[in-house]
Image (cartoon, rainbow, N blue to C red):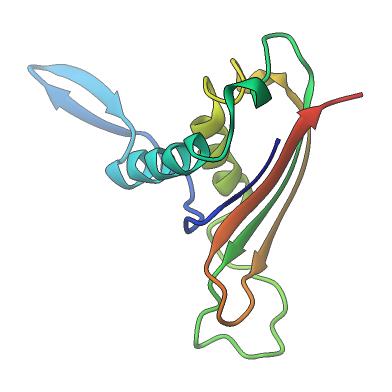
Amino acid sequence: MRAIIHVEPHAKGRPKVSTFGGHAQVYTPKKTRIAEADIKAAIRNKIAKAERFGAGEALVLWVTFYVVRPKSAPKRVKHPVTRPDLDNYLKTLLDALDKFAFPDDAQIVNIHAKKAFAAVGTPPRIEFILEREE
């Protein structure tokens, strides 16, 4: 399964806690829910049901998150070494793919991830390849 998703990478937000009627409730922040929904919507149009993986299959993921270079960043800066962290981008992507491309994200046994600046004039995006581990 190979896809290019034209959405801006978004880091997974920390769970929020509120109280209602004296009981604690834990919920996912709205921006994170929207980002996951955007990724799911983009993937649904690109991935056929035949490309989805079954339960118990070991999977490997190659992913690159292309982010917009800040205008304040000097040209000599080659890599986006600031926040958000790469692992938080991964969490958002995996949660969006979970139950759609594969039944459980625990099936992913190997990950190759990278974050990079998008080339000038190209939009931010997520490019990934997901396949069976051999």
